Length: 139
Image (cartoon, rainbow, N blue to C red; front, side, top):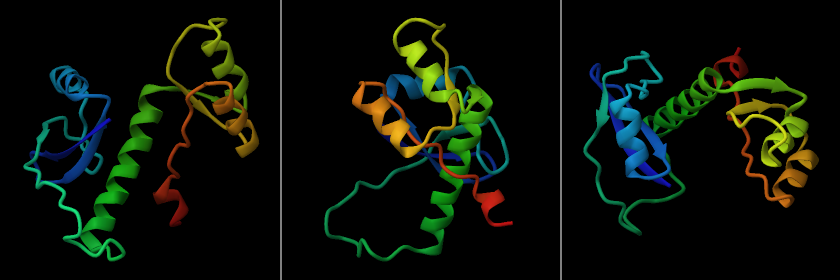
């Protein structure tokens, strides 16, 4: 997994997580990178500073850091919703079918209890929680 600092032409900064640098290159070439703030597709890598151990108080977060985290979480959620099928409460069953080759492979998301998610992971099925809708949670 690789994390790049990204920026759109309007100056919004955010992070993008990619399997590897080739995944970034492919998404950039296909116009799949989208600013989570303004939905601009004119996105490019932003200059990044190296992470140096011990140079910051890890407990302290600036308002800008929190704003960037919120942008990232909102963008990740939007990306999943725009690019995957919502299978609702059928998620555990459907992801198993996909994993075992009983259903067409495709990106999906849905609902699962903590116990169901744990069982999926124990079966070797890779799942991850979808970040909450922060705009809905603040209303």
